[in-house]
Image (tube, rainbow, N blue to C red; front, side):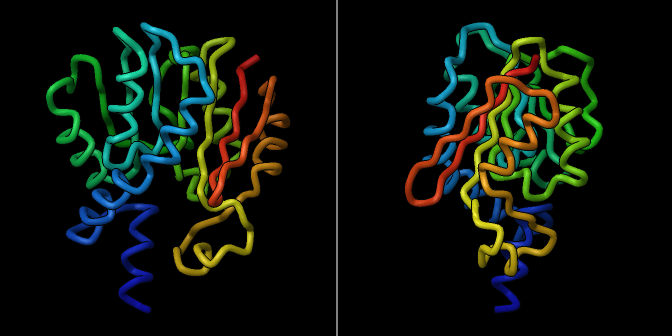
Length: 203
């Protein structure tokens, strides 16, 4: 149980050999959730997009495929994640894909920079979530879209006991938090087994 707990706690901040294994695992296992969640957004050609908590970099690839001549930025708090994401996107790195280390709490981007911001399996670990949501609004263009995708939607999930520092939010709560943050046209969608996507538009 101790080894398993250590492995999955790398979800929050992948480090070392176990962290690298976790990043490979995440790139593979998050694909169904991410592809479904992104299908709920009418992504346009030429968009500038940001993936917060970009992990192993697979979501950056998926975003780029959906926007001809688009530009994708990725940010992650983990050095290991940044290195993996850069390797996965090496052919377009610093051309169409730009990746750096940083926190959702203080995004190193100018106001009104992005048409779309995504957060896949990561809001569980954001410090001071309401403040982070204001940061997302700051970097989104007016009318820009924010998409949260989660697979753990039960506050009392076994995962919150297994993964240190993890907080699960029901999609209804996340929608309410987006409303409180000033997002408009907020909705949430569920899909079996436990997928949820929460969407909002920057006013």
